[in-house]
Length: 261
Image (cartoon, rainbow, N blue to C red):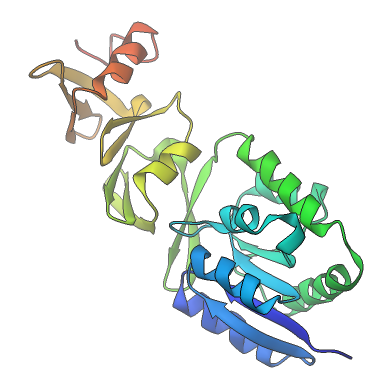
């Protein structure tokens, strides 16, 4: 049997090493490359033409879906998504017959994915088209109810409605959930595009606030606000981003019992 040439794409070194170790124990598998980000994955696929790509969905910069779109249906190999997504996203994968490994996964589930990936790589000429279709469905889908947090090889979830505010620093984001803080990789622009825009408003170039957690809005200078959250945290809105806050107030999104103008 011809070896199945695979590449591993994940921004977490521990996750890459674990998947590599599992794959090396499997017969007829050749690991052609390991990539730590989406840009290097696109380059590796174009250079190496692998049969299968194990692709992490959530990565900073180009995420897994961006990688597929950058390659296009003609260049993309069979893909096994490695994901921590919720049931809504997994249903979309199932509808389009695209396989996934839900973190954390075991050897038995990996072998199932390998068997299916081999069949797709050899026989399914429509796999590229179906990959694009599943991404279109997810791009147009509802905002996530949970945010996956990856830490030391573990994945756990934070409910979106429990996040009071989000603070960005470079390619990292801090999710503030009550007294807890959760660090994830990503940019403010990326997470803003995913979140419910009726609930989360960007109030500063590096800050997003959950309007359901706002207790008071205190007018500041030149149309700016000091935002007081229910836990007492204070964050400032910039002048340009205060417009959306004003629209939320005017639209009744925040009740006057919780927001002081």
